Image 1 (cartoon, rainbow, N blue to C red):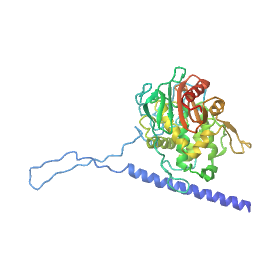
Image 2 (tube, rainbow, N blue to C red; image 1 turned 90 degrees about the horizontal axis):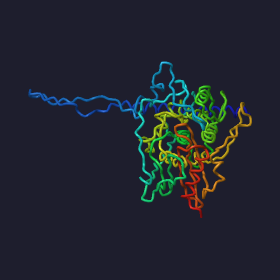
Image 3 (cartoon, rainbow, N blue to C red; image 1 turned 135 degrees about the horizontal axis):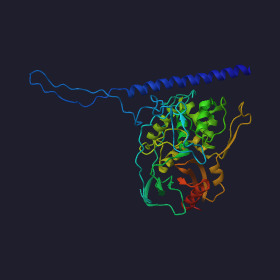
Image 4 (cartoon, rainbow, N blue to C red; image 1 turned 180 degrees about the horizontal axis):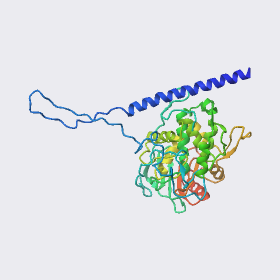
Length: 434
């Protein structure tokens, strides 16, 4: 009898997957039709003919919709610009890793980003005090497992005011912003809108994009059956992480991991294996998922100053953001009850598998290290990052003793503890102590 129930459960799972795949095909066809639609241009010329009875002739141009990625689409490009040996070399290896590599040659078949030809925007600086093979959902999907449309996130903005200040000298981070979430005001900033490498802070958008694509985030998110579905870790995923020196959860090739574990593994230990598994589960491939991420940036109004080429946070000249944009992304993710739960977990034990019968205990060390510090409140959510180009960076959300929330994002610190101490100093300055 138990076997029959298991078979029925497996059959229901297959039906759900089949429905999602069918929806994916429909949405993809819909998107292709819109993209290939012929847009009439203005008349190029009107030929005036002297002979009576002959009128005007309007010539119409047929053209394709422009590709918003700034180059060839990710679906049509294998990833990298062509190289004789099929590899492209990033800059330099990291001195320490929080989930990113920084300079190892990367095989095309493991890593394909579609905006390789897109140029980095010129830096915009604010002065101090101034304004796989995984079964998954379609790249264009915005509905949950039941086919209902998921509400688009509300666009959040924060503005400078006459009271906005710079950072005190003892704050060493090169970039930073502190935002009063409720009032939507920037309290303090340093190069808040200057482009920089976001490193593993990228993964905040990774989990937000995945949760939205899978329809996870309502009040009943804990009972969403998608979280208990599994994804098998492939050798392409483990090779990608190994080649780039990424931090990992520690999943093995062939290990079947739940979607829930992929979310927690992406944030707490900044696991590249979890992030890539999540990307492939949701969109079918890393490249397709990155398209979703950049589409999410457009929805949030951040695409002019932020663009991502991978879901992990590896350095790339076309992978950039600002601390202000990361703050907006964190605010949006924190508005999703499930993402907020993941981002606020101090520890988590993954489910039992054949390879790890007792699961794996993982930690968010930023939250565990800052919890004993006097911040005049409580740091609720946090995500760190590190690559050579960004140095140590972190994004966090805290609440003061009255429950009022603030967001702090910094980058360009000289180490893990200096980065944490900057957040402590900034929160001590701006959160009400009593």
